[in-house]
Length: 273
Ligand code: GTQ
Ligand code: FE2
Image (tube, rainbow, N blue to C red; front, side, top):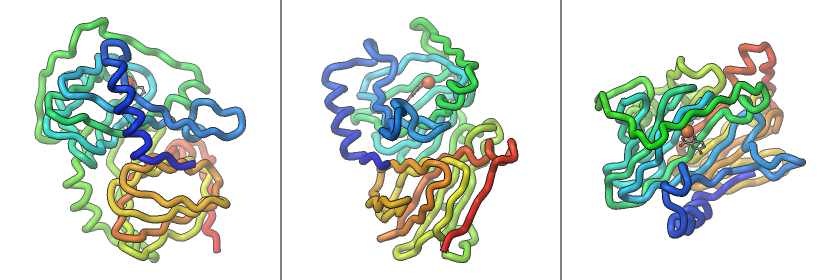
């Protein structure tokens, strides 16, 4: 299944005409995969949503046991998130972590709407049941730190530099894994495919979600052929044979439960013809 950023943006803009962050703690649009009797998950362990925050808005502080992270898509200066008192800017392509039980709230002090993609391991926590959630009941988080770098913040500028330095694999694809020792359930990667390059067709018992941060291309998954562009999101359920092909220079972000599968000895991977 694929979700288009253009559609998500339109729906969020319309929601923004009606619903404030006073009425809804988060203005998010869940990407549920309409397969079988599923009515929530994006893939088995991960849920994604587009989220939008308007200038002057403040998405209230809360914390929960699911791990969460955001991939920033668009927004002017002045969009930021606060995680346990640490203020982190949100610039297009940046990845920001809000690990299990960290207080977090989002702000837009700029002039343009801010848009990003949320990734959470909520479906896994649902399955296992240790779901806890706490609200700050209107007490904004005091900002205690405004660091220039932080373990919970992966600026896109650094990502692009690291991708350029990464050794290409046999197919010419450059990949990096973000260093997220705080996450034991999900692992984050970026892939760079130059125009015309393609990944090898493979399948894995891990489930992933891909989001495009630059360029365009095609994902072939099972019997589907999906044309993606910047901001689009693709669900890759476990054991689906797939390959990704770039039409022009493309960068894809990947959020995968591979680390979890590996740690419980359930990771299997197969290269296909
Ligand atoms: O921004 O804190 O899409 O708690 C779902 C749950 C976003 C958030 C979501 C959340 C958030
Ligand atoms: Fe949250």
